[in-house]
Image (cartoon, rainbow over all chains, first blue to last red; front, side, top):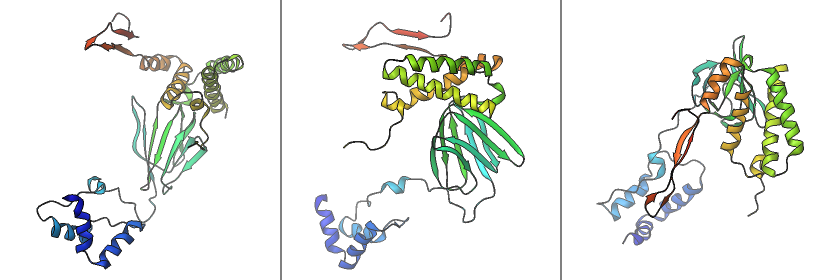
Length: 203
Length: 70
């Protein structure tokens, strides 16, 4: 019975509205409210059934983007075991994305960035706080909120330089002597992480 | 459908992102100064028991524990 519904709806709707429905399907601006033409045609055909819901009706509305760019960036920096920064308003953060150091200012385009081992710095006025991040992701939203998640993030003072040098030497040696792909990959990761820590401590 | 995106070296070697991320975190933790290192290593401890099921009955469980005396 319902297989006929679409045919009946297109038959009962006028040619003009069915044309506009087709036009709307390809348009870039979809109506945020329910399509009233469809609902009316549905009610004519199946008055006792509720019109079907679309996925967008189950979604919470996206947080509105302010029409003017806010002056401060709101940063949420979380680790699996602690919330390092929560809703902190700052001027800028520089994150170590895989594509390079990325400076994030208020009004940054919405981006999802994968992070590589490196330094993340949070700039607030003249204060700069630096953390060494092991890896993670940064979600930059349209409303100037940045969610940065990392598995491990430590202030630079907590890193032991001699351990870093030892680790770098050890993994460089492992990389040279590795045989299987997996061993090579692990050694490569070791070299990358230790070089990044080295650069962080000396830079 | 051949994939055209360049895969990171660890994925090409068969490693998943979670494995990569955990290895990176472990390496960073091992390079910390003393009081912080102790706290950090305690975060790596795991304790779990796995048992495979056959014919509706659990077989002998495998216990993996980093907490001593348990």
